[in-house]
Structure formats: C-alpha cells, structure tokens
View 1 (cartoon, one colour):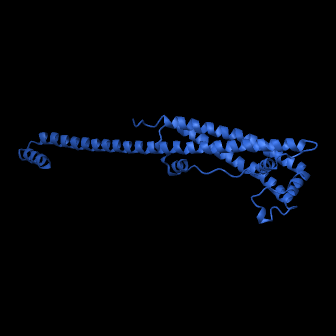
View 2 (cartoon, rainbow, N blue to C red):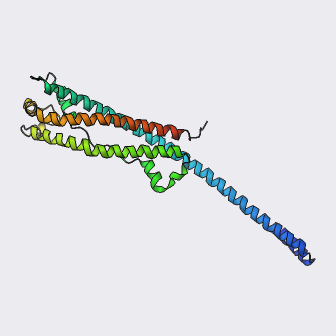
View 3 (cartoon, rainbow, N blue to C red):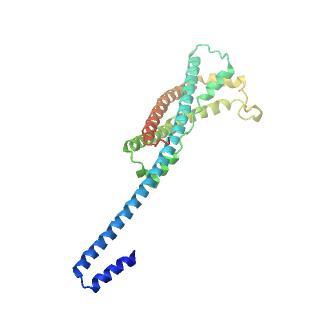
Length: 252
C-alpha cells in the first residue's frame, strides 16, 4: 500500500503536475488523519467496554458487601432487643419490695446481657477501595453514589456513637460487676469459670441493686436507641442495593 502511494507521488512529480500533487498530498493527509481518528475511536470503545466490565464487577461486589452488612445490622438489632428486654426484666425485678429469683439461670443470662455490648464496626472493604483508589468515577449512577455516601456516613456516625456511649456505660457495668463479685471467690476460682455464679454472688448483686439500676437504666435506653439505629442502617443499605442493582446487566 505504501509503495502504491509512493509511485503515485513520483509519477505526479515526474510529470510536474504540482496542482494534482498538492491535492493528492492533502488527500493523503486526510486519510492519515481519518485513520488516526478511527484508531482513537476504536481505542475509546475498547476502554469503555473495559470500564463497563470493571463497573459491573464493582457494583456486584458492593451489593454483596452491603448484603453482608445488613445481616450484621440485623444480628446487632436482635442483640440490642434481647439486651433491652433482659435489662427491663431485671429493672422490674429490682423494683419489687421483696424480689424473688425463681430461675437463677435466666437471671444470670439477663444480668450479664447488661454488660455485653462491644465494638462492632469494620471498615467496608470494597467501598473504601473505590474511594481511596479514585475508581469511584467508574460508577456512572450518581444517585447510587450519593446513596452510598449517605449510608456510610450514617454507619460511621452510628459506630462513633456506639463506641462512645454504649462502651462507656457497659464498661461501668463491668467495673461494678467486678467489684461486686470481688466479695466472692467466683471470678478468682478457675474451677468455677463457665458455671453459674454461687448464691453469695446473687446476694451481693441484690445488695448493690440500686447502683445496678442506675447503670442498667442507661443500658436499656442506649439499647433502645441503637435498635432504631440498626433499623435505619438496614433501610439505607437496602436503598443503596436497589439503586445499584438497577445498573447490573442481566446475563440472561
């Protein structure tokens, strides 16, 4: 092909047909430009196809991550509901003039539920990777992106609140429990670990029931608040999933 064009140029020059040669040169330049533009367009198409493929992969992974998060929030919500109910049962018992523990196993399960909260938040792997790598721009749906930013802002806010208030309160509960049980050898005797506390431990708890009531009321309030918080996180995660799934291509 190059030899063919070279021969044409040589033929035109040898015959001094400069005007025709000029037109030919312009035409040849246009062909080169058109070829470059076509190559660039093909390259753009390939890049778009690759980006679309990567976008689909990220969306699928985000959806999967959010679904796992929802299971965590549901588990936490159920745990807070059990904690709240356990504390309510204890508070009702401690309000009685002559409280009687009919089921000591049930009592201790509810009692220790009052100090059972702990840190739960883990950084979302896929979302963090997208934000930090700058590849978030690969996802075109801005509504879905905004929903994700809103959701993870709520997650961080809830986690920060959780670490500050429930952990502070349950730490106080644990300290009081340790102080109360220090009056017995239950915590110091390895042979008793994993077993039901002795009757003297139960007596020690009821002797300090007013102190426990103050702390456990706070535990119940915090548990109630976080039940609602988990519900909100479940809802925002589900909303983000619905928006993301609209962008997933159907393999069928």
